[in-house]
Length: 137
Image (cartoon, rainbow, N blue to C red; front, side, top):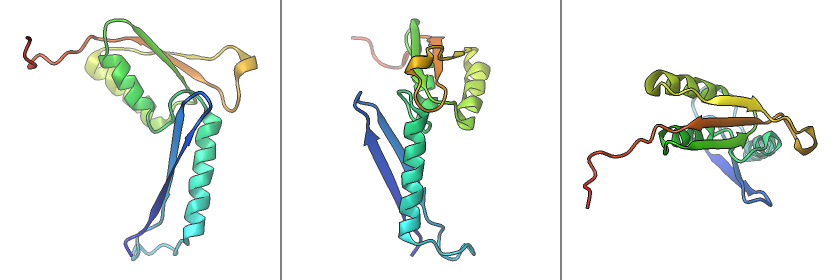
């Protein structure tokens, strides 16, 4: 078998979806064989980690939310998320390089509402990108 994987999705009471996944090593890769139960345990651990991180966006989609904010209308946008992933940090550098747009990052100050890890509030004013090739009617 080339391998197998598992994706788990959880919905919070506020309507936020968190996702996590785990995969086995492909056969013939030279690594030890992984049983499906171990893959399921890893996927559950990854999902619990995402829930603990909190915020309205999971770590897999932080960069996508930043992109939508950057390309959005010339108005202030903000969202709250858990600690930024290394991928998101590099993605923010790319946004600054290509769009000359810097996001404001601040940690949440209300300690009473903090559950899990620290939260980051990402804020920016979009560039108002629009599709110029779309016909105007």
